[in-house]
Image (cartoon, rainbow, N blue to C red; front, side):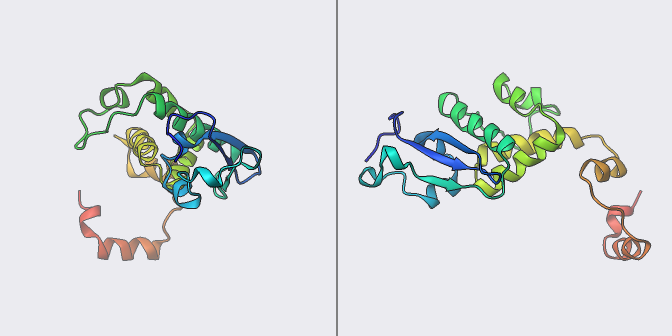
Length: 173
């Protein structure tokens, strides 16, 4: 069995666009997808010249690079659990660790990619952090502003009428 502290045990993560990232097996274990794809505990199957490669077909390299950074940092300084109900209305009030606040202070498109990557790779701390940042962006916005931010298409008149019938409570003032 390979120790989690063994820095020499490396695996590869291959992005949708074919870029390969090396990561320590101990850092990669934060991803359920990686753990279930390859057996990270079997020393007999590890070969330095033929590192295990996990294809991540739904994640572009720019995003996967950030995911690898997150996993590596998480091994040194785990994200403190995000308590619910939230203890504040801003990221600064909820997340006390500066590195993590800075990590999700990215362009909105990359933030949404991080949410998708964390969900696909089953990295719960990253999913929690990225979703928290999305929620702080949406806080205090009107329905129309949220629709634009989330790129939700407008409903047709017919769809809106149906929604008003089926979900009256949403449309009450």
